[in-house]
Image 1 (tube, rainbow, N blue to C red):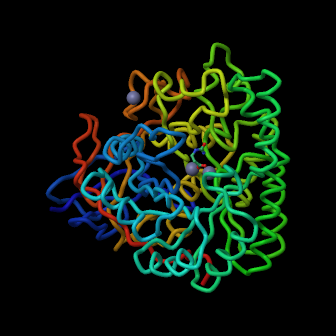
Image 2 (cartoon, rainbow, N blue to C red):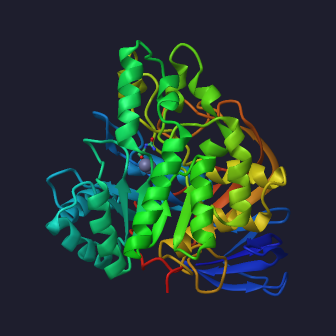
Length: 461
Ligand code: URP
Ligand code: ZN
Ligand code: ZN
Ligand code: ZN
């Protein structure tokens, strides 16, 4: 089966070029000047469209156990929604429960995901029980294609690791070439602030934001960077939300340290004003780190331009407003943390292109090419080039759409972006050469996606 995508503008990190793309089976066979090739089993007219490498969302949580419930998207529903939005690869998190092993955790996540994904997927490993056995198993995880390990300075008693435990895991990561991903918020201090607020009778969702001040993200980010420096381990700060944290990352990078960071659309477009919505509606916007004051947003956009923020991921972690966020009515500390977003990352960041905040090339770089390199998938993923997987998105840059829970495909009963009017929309999506989304709808299957055994971080060689 061959497919010719003709007449479109192929977008890479250097911008857009009029080129045709020839797909043979699962791979891109050639990228040519317009009109050079004319025949194929199927010809797709991409006139007026961008032809993008499929989006790579390096931070999702499907079916994640959290706060006594599970994030509401399964691997099937979540990856289908991702495909609708032009994302053709996710990297999800396997979550080690305390007292269990990393390899049994990995088996468990394979059971959930294998045979149930619409697009290709990989895993990071959340390490929440640092001990001799877990540290030894990190090596086996790398062999199993999972070379990135998330740790938490937040959530004491759940995922939290002490500085000593972090130091030990970082030393191991350094030894085996793995990357430590850090949830950098000072959870010990936050728990004190949250307990005090609750005791004083402050129970509404906005307290989630008020008791997790940006200074405590800045402090934890600096501490993580220091621990990484002492051990020599590469560090990737996940879901960076605050100017203070960005400043710490920028300083470390200026000093030549292997420190990288991602941000998420919610920190670019939503704010603590959403968390403060009355009648418990703010619960829809509870995630950690919390949504910040809008004054942080220009810094985040600048970080995306300067590459101090290298990646945009969603941290997709959907909990229904009705039966799940509800758990925290009367106590903001019990609201399950997370915001849905896997479907709209490409669209939301395209607004940054429309507004002149980032270039077309930076859009593709932060949403596809860099995540591929950061997590050992390049050039198989993240680029339109001969030999790469034919994960291709035809994107209509002038189509209009309005985001709504009524029309989205994520398995969650609200949209954090309800009523957002956007310019640009996915037209057609190919995953390894198969058309999975077209103007006639979703044509893929949740048995199509394959597990991606990843190499190590390609920025570290
Ligand atoms: O609130 C969030 N971010 N939920 C998902 C878990 C995490 O910390 O990434
Ligand atoms: Zn986190
Ligand atoms: Zn997360
Ligand atoms: Zn439900």
